[in-house]
Image 1: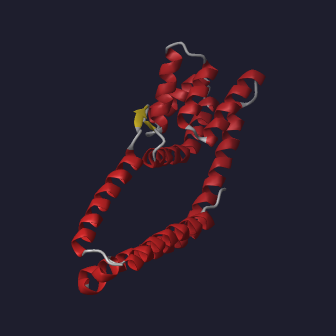
Image 2: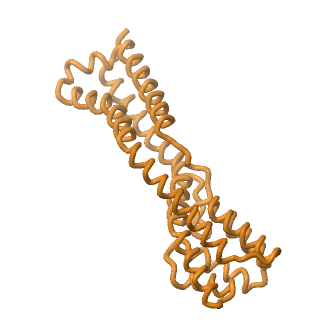
Image 3: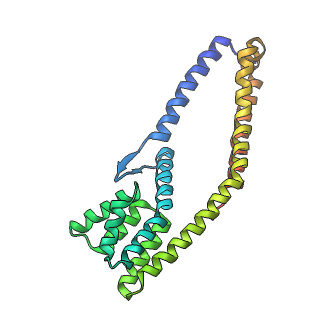
Length: 231
């Protein structure tokens, strides 16, 4: 069974346009920016949130050290927050400024911390806010708690960077192997159209291409699962 070349060309063009539009809608839809965070279920929103959260986590140990030094100098916990909001960088400074605004508007201290933790969605920040709330109730030494949490976060981030370095080759190999059949197919079609078009216009060719795409996706998912290591 064969297909007319003109029909195949128009079908490929229509499918390409529909696929591009579908991917754009799927990856970009539902993004709603709120307090610097993209609230949405699309992959693009989750990716943007992940990048912002990762940057926040990288800045958190330094912010804890700043607050610890401020407390040692005799500042209150509120003044320590002000120090981070004034001297920190985005996004952590932005989030602490929002925390300040909430406190000035009359929101409770623990409610403001809980709002900050939910807004950012960082496990490290949740640990910090929980430690602050407990220390205020029990009268613990907040300075020592900040120092210990900061050291713990720094150690874990060091291990995560090492893991990313060790798995970088696997990620690159997965991208190259996944893109190679598509790139070679496009090059061969451009160089030898009289050889490739009959293949693309036949039912076995269409089935082979569909099987190739399925195998590429399955292989990429397997490689991603192997190189993804939670610390």
